[in-house]
Length: 449
Image (cartoon, rainbow, N blue to C red):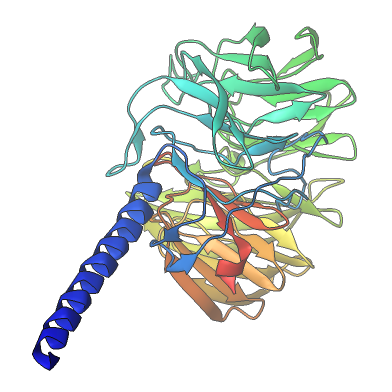
């Protein structure tokens, strides 16, 4: 009898082991499937971050306008909504940050990217509207050129720009369909388009009924919400990715060939002041890449000085009123990167945070230009985010650093997202990462603790 009981017990134990093993396999399988699925809810284990993600069954809508790149002049990109936690892959490159309208996460893409050399492979783009509760795609709209503008949203109208970095000639940058396009935010239906000779890659800004853009054929122009021209000025210098910054009725941006930093009256397009950096240095870059930031009367941006096959990254500040250069910082040298040379800066509490392809995150006093601390991150093209006393930055490979205000490493982990030249989006409960490898990841804030 004892022997029979022992055999039965062994059989039961064996069956229990098989059941537990199968259950563990299912958890592992679904966890990994979630990482690469087109969309998924969030109950299961996320193996990428080694944490459990609980499903959020509701999201709070956001119906305010998004009127400029990264939402605010300082580039601390926060939207007061609650989202679900999800991950999906749209399979084509997301170069710039997303926007939110009502319960939709609006994402623009620029076609597939060769991740080995970070070169875009075709001239195609798409706008995706994603449910912020569960990551499901609500609508999408395809276009015949790349989209490198963050969607700006005005009264349920989404504004995007089309363009690429291929030159038609030495004066015009951008081939194929170049245009500013308006879509209905709810349905994705195209409302109108305004065609341009050169690319419209910088994110436009909105001021007093006008959509203002600087583009690839040396023009700055303003359109009304019906797509009609309000004013247009020739500046004979093209803009690549330097998204116009709007502060107190003035638009600031950088352009190339010659490399000039501009202050333009948003009401009529008149030039208020400009700084011609090409008259100071013979071989430059990056000024037309970096989207400037503003705080307390000071504009901060970046450019590069080219020496043979290398660049020297320069962070600088100017007086917003008269364009006087206040300070410049040499952030170091590196080989010339494949695309963007000078990422945007972020300003918070009187400190400028800036990283670059050099791979060093600098914290700089806004007023004096004194370096407070520096932290090595590796090759980087995006700008930092600020969250509850922490500095958050991703390098180009997707590794995420969480630093204290003093520059000490608090936490670091690999993400599946390889970012482009823009910030991550912070919400009330999530950190939304988007990447040139097509991945959108709505990550719970408690993973940063």
